[in-house]
Image (cartoon, rainbow, N blue to C red):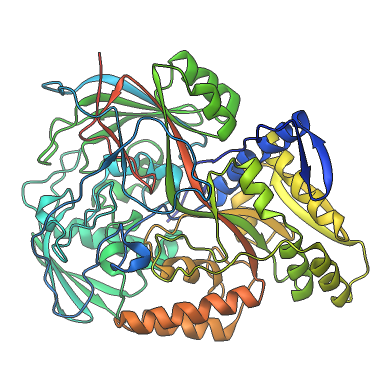
Length: 607
């Protein structure tokens, strides 16, 4: 079974300078003009991460660390019941807090007004990267998360406030959402039975049934699929069709986050007949059961979705056409937004300043689960030396990056999780300490200057500028950093194959809001987002947490894992992102979610 190449994406946050005319970066005085040049690099830095960022935000078991999320139905014998929903907050403009947003619900933009009686108008959304595939199992990217939920439906619904519709702890019942499962029950810890909606069809006319669910997960778990999402669903041993509207999951191990995972990317259900032709399904057609159907896809140019009049949901789409335009260049995207030919996009900080004050535009910031930082290749010299990795970590002036380059639109973190996530701890980031960095480098036994390679996409000017800024920080303490330029078309494949160098910019969305997804993906031996690191003790810990439904035990494992990763200087987590959205005034009642999985039902276009 052939697959398209996978490309990873996250929305880019950007750089902004402070108001003072001159700045100091790692002891070097630079002009405002030079610093503006450097600041653009953070947007580029995030753009490089955009090719590597996986797993848009998601829900997890309800904990203080994920208070905006809901409790996943995961314990044996539990049954989905009824509950109530959470209201969205509203905001039409924004300014950053000193530490950046950390958690919260969706933000409603241009709320109020009278919706049209039926679908009308066209909305144009800018994407920085091409979707690369229309098959929801083929990718694991935030970029695709901006459109996929509108075409395909998951089994379990999680709304833009990150509320899981599981009927527990006051949450709405499954049947109240837009998921394809109306209810479910665990007969024991390893058996989950789901009752499915009736009267649902795919865009191509095929009937949705238990066979659709079985085909989706059989295909996902087939090693030949090479899906980047498979690792999240390996607890599924088999899927049994009980009858047309009943499906039974048999697990080979308990999975404390499975219900949440069924609300995620791998839980988007595809039709049995259409997927028989992999190439056509992923590149030409993509029938789902969502409120919009794909009508045209021109690679590297645009993806067009149109309202589907056969949609089964309680609320019908109110926008007739959604056009996702692929515009890689930052300046072009901004120009088209200011000119009114793009209605929705993400902005970097300096771009946000250009849009603020325009009465026809809203600029909205929202804290997201995505964490950005640097992956260090632990298998290549010299980053296979812990002291070298320690020197890198302590040479980076994170406070300067956040307060000046990011303009405060970020929160420093010490682990590769955001405060949304179960398992997150307020661990201090590695201190900026050039003397400690120099000592670590001396202790490494590697002759100075220590040569490192830092890989970026060659066509991304801003990413190159950011790499130059970090290069300066590292060279100050005794490194000799070489910035290597790569083709965006092969960058991700080269990363997972371990073909890139010592330092790779990286972003991780953590869509389940649970450390299981993040740590298993990034640190478990030979997982797809871990091309170089292996620690048998950490593997054992992660196996332990996957084998219990006891959340107290899982939290204890998280703390041990946090310490183990932090102390080993595996990589350098830097900050939790705050994304900045630009929205035209023609877009009404648009709820911006923290996890980037845009949902257009309920929004409309003002004529």
